[in-house]
Image: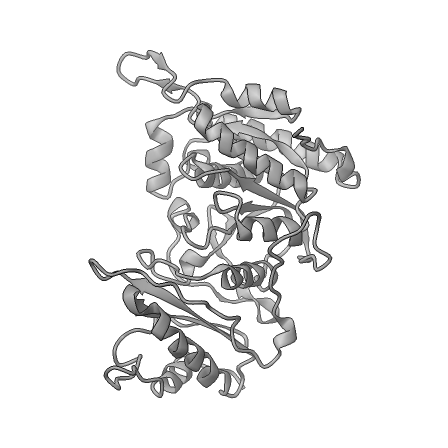
Length: 387
């Protein structure tokens, strides 16, 4: 029996707010409902100062929907509605209700080496992580343009936006809407510029912050990997969250990554954090495919003078020092920034531009390495850091 959004919404009418007795539906707290086969996804908006008390509502909502005929699993999330001056309280979100709990997979939070519970994605040849040690270095812009460059170079490519707290891919690819059902009850990814894209940004409103803790984030990432109809791919580009926390570590341990790319700006502060990201991948045995220096050079549009706002060459020196490939430089340019904000990435907007050619060249290098060592990942350069 198929389930409809109205069925879900009607069932949620029975979930009442403790302070007023109003239904969460009547109060307008239930977001857009997404149904893929027997899987149901929705979010509940919670005032940031009452997030702890709303956790019981989230659990109740999952249990109510799970009772509907045709429902295999339910995943409800809490999103925060900011109250000025209020202290944010973050609930501990549990794994969603399911009639087949064995299908849920949560990640390990610690330990070295790859997890034995690897997430296998059928039809995907190579999974490549684009990472950074810190935010603000242009990692997501780089990931989007690299995916477009792979596509332009002839590889079938898709993008997974693994940044649950700050998803950027919907904006970068200019995609709006919600994913629909795909083959085998899986979610069908959204599409932009002939690239399949999956992001938490498609499931919640852009201005709604996610207030999940680690286990819920890992579960969501696992579902977006395993329960999305990716089709046949040469490369799945994973835009990793910035930093080296639980989500990044679990992804590195459980996902069979062919390699990782580190994005950094040239200055010393960014390189310190980039080195931490490199060290994390090394500790879990993920090959480091190389370093990209972003925002490397600025050419004044008025006088054509070259300036090194964030320094220059630092990432190349760090790559040489650590013995990993230096993949190339990407300039700091208004054209890249404007295109990213408008959902028109430079590789799609102007394939013949000098900036697009830089991305195309980097993608070609990565593909050559992936194919040359597809059966010999031990031959891909690995980072070794001496204490």
